[in-house]
Image (cartoon, rainbow, N blue to C red):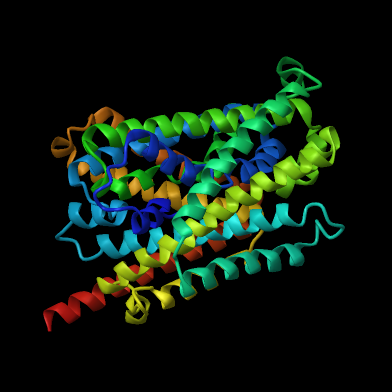
Length: 443
């Protein structure tokens, strides 16, 4: 899960400055459109072809259901700690609730950091002869993680302004890419759909679930609750508007891509599909534009994650649910947490491909959102939530998780064992820390 561009912003904004709805929308969009379309396009087209825009819209519907519980809990608690704080406060009597959500959230940050770094590397080397060399790609991914790690260890001065520039520039470039692609289309959607007889609703829903991580980021608005006016109105406005705009951006770009770039080209180079395909249609300037957009998008996401995730990890460590050393700070900077998260993200890059990293991120985001829906259902009267919508959200998120596992079981069972083993390890670690903290508190 991407972390807080807003945490970055809040270090650099004056505390008395009120964030309005337009700024909150920009924060959420900056989190969601952090390389999402560059990451999911190739995999989506390889699985459902011309139905890719529909799969993206289905993912947006699930994300909207997930957002419902985040919004209701955010408005009720008004706590910038978001998911971790919500779960801890909803289940205060449980010694296991806080560490469980803490371990899962931090792993979500690690998987999305790995995903953005992998995508950055894929586009960064896409114009070179070694574009398909997996080890070069992984080393470049490690390099960009290292750069932002060192920046965050040495100094975070000025990162807020850099972040703003990257967020708004990438959105402008995405609009330009969309316009250019659609104006250079060589076929129509009805023609493409005629050739997709083998695609069914289940396949579309599986893709919507696998690529769900592309919508991770809307919850960053809640981190800004202390810097906004009228959170009960502005949180839902900003999140739902940002989700709508993210779906619109993803759908328009994916539609332009499938109408302009041959499917074979997208599937062959799915790690950097937009750059490869656009270059063949528009020439070098088209390729350069897409690469710049991808590098900006992924850089802003990497920057926000390396800044915010270690601070969340340090806070959880201070609560006693991670090793004490991860909570220690040097000049207010959680150096050990930064090194830990960056190192684990690089290990995940070394261990997996784009698709497995994407699935890790989506599974974690789905699971955390599922826990939020459960928490909201438990206190639905306090949050004034609709039981029907909350149950629909829970069922939708659970179905998404099961669909990814079903896909893995049928196609890559060894990866299912790996995913299951990893989450079992995370859950066991959370349980052990909850036990240790309970024993310490009782002695």
